[in-house]
Length: 317
Image (tube, rainbow, N blue to C red; front, side, top):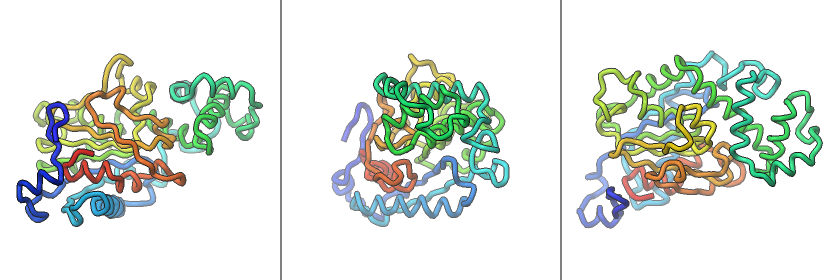
């Protein structure tokens, strides 16, 4: 199957080529996790991700047992011991927001909510969202508007994730160390990179930071065999996030021409704002999934989805 200038192998293609499961090259994958992993390890993450990927491949393709070589570097280990989030280490939801943080969070919330949501928020008392003293009136109004668009209280999760994204993007030494750790797990035969949540921002960053890729061939900042990026639950669709990455509103997200990009998102995922990336990255494949109501942002649910299973095995999502 052909999409633009790229050929996406189908099950029929492999059958016609006479390829058996044993003949197929293993998918060599590096996973980039998001925040909230201080209580785990590289070994546990790798087991959980491999199990989820294997389940999806078995359910949605005819390649049960497809060989997967997976590494998920535990970059959370670079943070202060016992810390499970980036940013202020006291109260991630309280008055510890700096003016710069508040401005970024307000812009991110404003990117997501619509005029009807804002009008609704203006009619509500500030006490609707807990004690007003914990928030500036500006943030409180925007959170009410956000929760009007996405009922269920996801606004608090969104604020925390945006603060974490901002910390990564505004702490260059930390960001460079995270990228270096992930890059060290990429081998000459790694073909797929998967990034979840903030991990998708890190993964995208890896394709564009030549400054910390000394000695690598231009155009192959990750490795010569990397030809697929899969992003899941990504906040890259939020304009304020891209601006902090020094990407102008008029610019599109892009990868090297030889790398196919599959973005998987759940419309109910509060971290993505319910949007995909096709509008800001025309060359990618946007695939919507239903991860259920309990945790639409779950990494495991994304990893066992059909678009991820098909992309990992080389098929069109």
